[in-house]
Structure formats: C-alpha cells, structure tokens
Image (tube, rainbow, N blue to C red):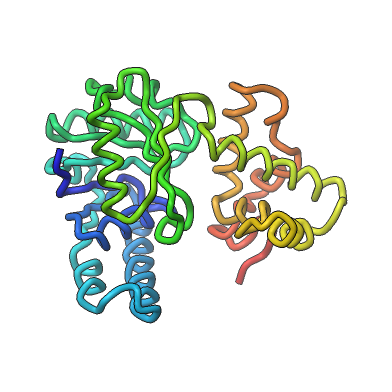
Length: 283
C-alpha cells in the first residue's frame, strides 16, 4: 500500500516528534490533539527543530519551509483521519484513552488505512480489538527524541496481516528509521529492558548508593549508554514510566514493581522535564 497522508494523534513529546519526521520526509502530515495549547507547542517545536536542522546542515531552507507550512494541525479527530492512509496514535499510556481514539479513528478513516499505536507496553492484539480492522492494526514504537533515535519497533498482534507489517516497515524506512520485528509479549524488547534498568536506578537513588548525577554518569561512561537512566526517565516523563512499570508488574511479576521513590515523585507532580522538575530540576 502506498502511504501519502499520515495523521498523528496526540501532540505531546512523542506525537510532535513523530509528526516532524513524517513532515520532513515529505508526507502530507496532520497532527491532532484535544488541546490547542499542545498543538501550539508542537508547532513551535517543529519550527525550532527544523531551524536546528538547517544550522547543522541536515535540513535545507526549502525543507524547513515545507515542514513549517505543510504540517496541518487540528483539534478535530474525526476530520483529521478522513483522508489518512496511516494513523499513528501517540496518546498517553491509558487503555481507556487509547480505546476511545482508536474507535473514532477506525470509524472515520478510509477502509484501507493502517492504524499504528506508539504504545511501549500495551498488547497490539488488545488495541486491534478496539477496531473492526484488527488485521490492519499494529504497534509502531518510536523512541525519544524521535528525530534523533534511529529505531522503530514493529509489533504485530494475533490478527495483524503481513501486509500491514510490510507497510509500516516501508514507511519507517522512508522516514530514515531502521526496524525490528518483535513478537507480541508484554513490554516487547526495549521497554522491558529500559524499565528494569530505570527502576533499579531509582532504587539505588532511594537507597543512597550514589547521587542521581553520579548514577547517570556511571551508566553513561561505564556502560556506554547515550543517556543515564534517571535522565531518560525525566525525559520520557515519570508518569509515563510509572504507568509502564505498573503494567509490566501486573503482567510479568515482582521484579517490575515500581520503586517507592517513583510513586512519590509522581504524586508530588514532579513528572520530569515537562513540569520543570522530576529527579532533576530544569530551568
């Protein structure tokens, strides 16, 4: 299937990054969210990211203009999906929210449209059951920050067709990403490992093993990770990390029980970079 028009649902950190890479690759891209404020932030992000790309010689002035003026934004989900060939759902990791989005996307999008979720933990079979096209539904898991991270994790559900997997793989390659195909299992590959490492780092911080800065520095320099696990948790959002760990704890057992410190930070509203304070403070 040829994909020309892409709709991204959710204008948060992940959604705006996903919209940016599709627009940069020349797809007709629509970004939709219930919040006009989120959409305004997303447009600012797209413009600033394009400007940085120009400064680094990775984006031309013509591409920048096409991205900034060619990205459509709307608060109306039904209208956003009407012409879509591919819909990428990137809303928070809450089943009821994803179900509501996928039901509307299924009802109002063209019959041929593929529906992909950016979930990092939830079963693609379950997500497909929210639609009448489970064979055209799969997980398309991006990584943060989307413009820089080269991987897309493709996870197919019980009824996902090979054509759907092939379409997502081809589109991923067109936006400059490499792919891995993962069999459905809670947490897939990357989320299981990342959540386990991040949770252990929070336990170490809670126990006073070392400061947050030194834990992150040790992992970056000693294990050659590009980011420390606590830095990454702040970037992803501590609420998102907590939701993931709760799901993995429920499905995979005790080793994924969220660290009490993480629970405490989320209750305090310290969610990471997006609230200017999490494990670290941000100006």
